[in-house]
Image (cartoon, rainbow, N blue to C red):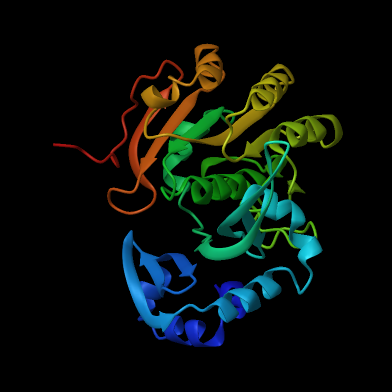
Length: 309
């Protein structure tokens, strides 16, 4: 949160730092909209600060994001978001500029959504009996936005690259393709978040290209990638599997059944590439486990499931 507080207008950061410790630790988003009150979301609930975000605030905020140089934002403006130190992602909205029917940039920025990335060390430990059985299992984490997919993936990567002596798990080589700089929170290519000794990160690199690069150059035991879903991803996934590399990945969706309806992911699932599927929701807060399923999509016994009426 320190990085986020530094780029916010002083008046806004002062108001947020007055939050009680519990609410402070539960902040998920900070939304800035020109001409409207600042919105802070915690545990899915909006809280509106007694402060109107102004056009001048927006200009100063953009200048901080760009380090006073719009050139550094060119690529990010095509994607609609900027990732800052610590892995925090800032969504952008405004006037879209098209070129040959493709998004060239977003100008006249008027809305910003700061999504807070949090490290939760140890949250993956309860899944180890499913994810590791003599070797790491190819795993897909499924969940809607803000269900904790990336947070869980990050801790899995930490455990794999550190080892887990309590279960006799040795540290393995981990290759992370961090397309949006959210998993490792790199600054100048160096991860700022906690990992073990055996981790290599390709920061701000497209997933498919990054997977192929790591396979060829870094010989990872495990590949970690966030939010798969393109045809290029499928090709790289199959290349990794054929090379004997274990996969730890996330994808958007509410359930395995929903994900299976997408033609691309359906092909991967039908090929039984993945041994485990973890379904997450935010019913009881981000990271709520709905189910853990095997390669056939059958539920596995797990005491932490949320039971629906």
